[in-house]
Length: 392
Image (tube, rainbow, N blue to C red; front, side, top):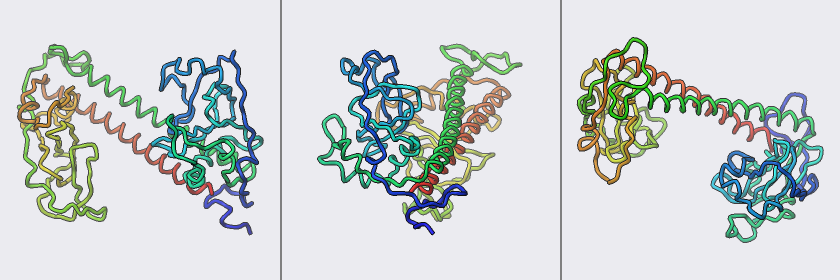
């Protein structure tokens, strides 16, 4: 029976052989080819995204005179960018997916022979390899951000390698998962772009009293009102949490209107602000002016916010929410903004039927965005688990 330490926790049916521990140098051949006449795209490695066009980060002529020294890499060949980054502290390795590319000559470039290049690259990016890379760093980062890991040193890294057929199966599975992740990322971005465009088109601008795009059947001009005439505020003092000893075992979320939103959960069963799907609340950060919709019971961390609800329940809550979020306003000073500024802002508002149509449209769009984001998060979690369990 194979040594348990030499097989992954999860593997495809039919594979039982132990993985072989190999020094990278025994698997690779260095690549140093150049071609001053090449017209292949100039690319670089992003630790988060793999190979990207260099012009995505720098100007197209960033390489300058050194472009003639760039390595001409071909599909299936690998490069290790030994630059430290927030995403990968000890650099990143990727295989080239396009036919050819010219890449910086400071990268360590190599071919992995009969092995699967995608599999080898993924294994070299495994966080468990970082312990080996950490030992190879001789004197920290250079002035240009590159770690002092020579190619000779990099080749001493040891990885676990299965038979080629198993490498191919693992690689194909993870590539399919990557494609699914990219598909959902693309859907999220497209939906966000649609939302951004519609927010510009479906609300009047430049002093006009009708929007550029509106639902069929609505022709009346929009009225001018103050935002504070539509939304009323409540001070959150009664709902401030007493203890910050949070636990996921507790039931009531403690909120901030900032980016983190849910700070934790409390077991305090008093002073809870009641909200639900039918009676949602907007929490408005009085200093940063960021806001969130809340449709569940909650407590708050501090008084640095206002709790906003409709003055007239016949108005549409979601229309009011997107009107608020549609303001292009950047706070200049550390001061409270609702009473002194936002409540006095002039807004355009249609009749309640048109409000409801617009509010429902954007609310549905947000729900669709959230759905794809949840799917995306699940896929990322599946990939993370697979990378942990399918490699040694």
